[in-house]
Amino acid sequence: MNLFGGTLRNLEQSLDYAAVKNKTIANNIANVDTPNYKSQNVRFKDELDRFMGSSIKAKQTHPRHLSFESQLDQKPYDIYTNPSTLYNHNGNNVDIDKEMSELAKNQIYYQAAVDRLNGKFGSLQTVIRGGR
Image (tube, rainbow, N blue to C red):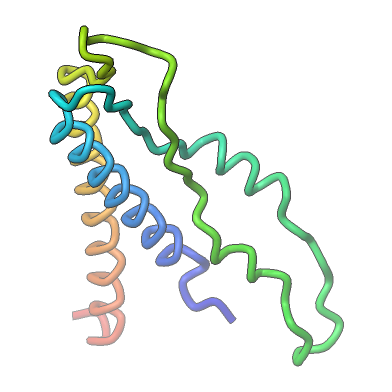
């Protein structure tokens, strides 16, 4: 039985994604002047589509049978390097304006996920206290 309908798991994966994206953006910003450094990005939608399209649907005929939900432990995002562009004369392709914009967007995304998680736990506290 899944007590929260997968909401907490989805929020956990959202926070994981935001943390990895933040680390990737910070790495790109730190290497803005490094010769021949190629920017990295976190790909989510393509991986999510692949992940959702390849899930196995199976009927569990006995409560003690193993479920096929183990695939959900995989992360639906992937880090990739963009080797095709060139912005600087030293072979570096980090666009600092784009990275700062992505950082701001990611911070908003992360804060929204944290707020939703806090709301979920607040609802649980209300239920545990009997509505008070």
